[in-house]
View 1 (tube, helix red, strand yellow):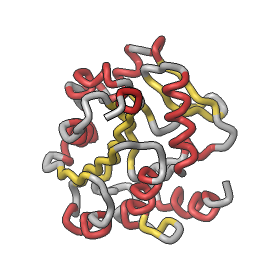
View 2 (tube, rainbow, N blue to C red):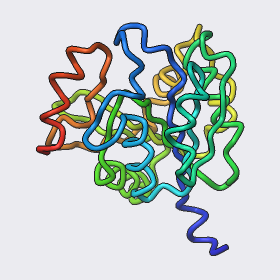
View 3 (cartoon, rainbow, N blue to C red):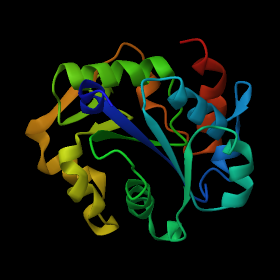
Length: 205
């Protein structure tokens, strides 16, 4: 392994364990372009500069596995997904195989194109950032990249302290923000109306 590559390695942890209660339909299986949403997200990450993709499943995990086990990814199941997103984050962290990797976090209901992911990765390493995320009109978006120095802190998050948000708040002086010129980084498909509104516009960016 070339040392330079290891020092600029990013592992993506895609969170897809939830029950999609507010959506009323399982978000992962919503149609997104030519794919289901989870297939789109996995494919997008694989076509970016990400080195390893870990997908954390929970609710209806066997069904979702059938859609994505064709991809060169690591699929892990969080049996405790009902206890909150932090349990899925920690489950994903336990599967990271590269000790020299930084970590990118993204949820399945936040569709992102490979170009956005690559722009954030480039920005993260060019600025020697410890925490990086995109913004649009001064609003913070996703995905978020953490330097590997935060590994232990991430492994110890919990719902009571608001998970990753607490790390960002406590290290605000270490955060670097990539300003974008469209709102893709803000897309978050919480309810079906959000999905219908964004779906057709997304591919016009």
